[in-house]
Image (cartoon, rainbow, N blue to C red):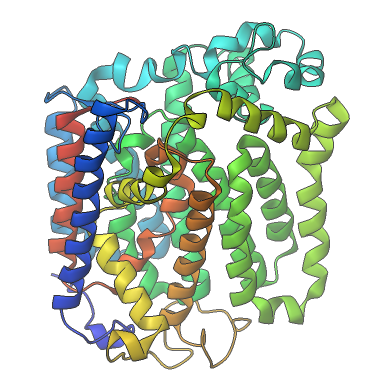
Length: 479
């Protein structure tokens, strides 16, 4: 059997398990407090607009067709995930990780059955497929798109259509035009693409921090509780597009690749036209730019295809008549016309973080603590770092030298810190009050690599699997 390399080989902080358990206890306390206070607020003031705070879900213990598969997949990943991640060739690891992620997401979705779990999710009155018929003339619809965002406009868009730039809805319109009609095809589009988000994160971690840490993170990126909401949620599709924009940027900087730079810019432009809030992926991109600044200094021409690619999608939609800034300001109006204007900011600013615990799992709470110990060793105990160039795998010559981000572990911790910062900005903005279990999927996937710092991976993977299975079997989620 292949064993996980000893902690000292990859920079895991040497401060024992007890601080990890303190972090887990704090995360459990946060979630418990959010549930107790949330139930009180909802039962008395009725201002949260969720049935099982802090999640948009209702209590409903159940099993379904996906239950046996979900149990088997979870057990297989716990038992064989870490050794396989250490042993497989890199390309084989990516293929197996995608297949396992896809199987995990599908099995959890099918606990609710095909119709409720996948085919029916994007056909409700709030969703994108409700308006396919209104896009019979796509250019005209794009020109008039902003006229139907606010709630008091004639024939306003459903909530999710109004809440996103038109590229989100246009994706499903084009699927329909291609003959892939209905909720089943739309749901599988989101599931299949959403499962690739873990690959994008793995590619990024390998490029910036070396292959050893990427391999350690792989099982956690697959067996993630967020998979409960990635089944047929359009936000899984958004997460994948955003993640690949970051991954391609990392490849562009570490391999001096002009095509990768152009593709990164193109996908980031698309990301901004899939969701207004995903402009905050720029914070993660800024972390990547900082970590790969040596590559940019060595070949500043990378900025040319990056900027050119970034301009494509905004130019196309602007020429078509859609004004992104006007759409965003009208969305703010629509947001405060509905539940967003009633939900209390004082509760959700911290209860949103409880949602993040539920989608990233207790292992991530411990991993984030260890990432903090890596970046702030004076506050987190001793730390053993790999000397530069010994991170395992393909550490690019363009990465920064010694200093705050001069080791593989520190670079990974810095990347995770960028994702956490993006999530906190979204939280403070007040535009993400509730439903962050799906809205924050594109940010949450970037917190999971912190689990590469954990020792005893099988125990932590078990905790991740148990949480996901309990959530999906005890609650009727709305997404």
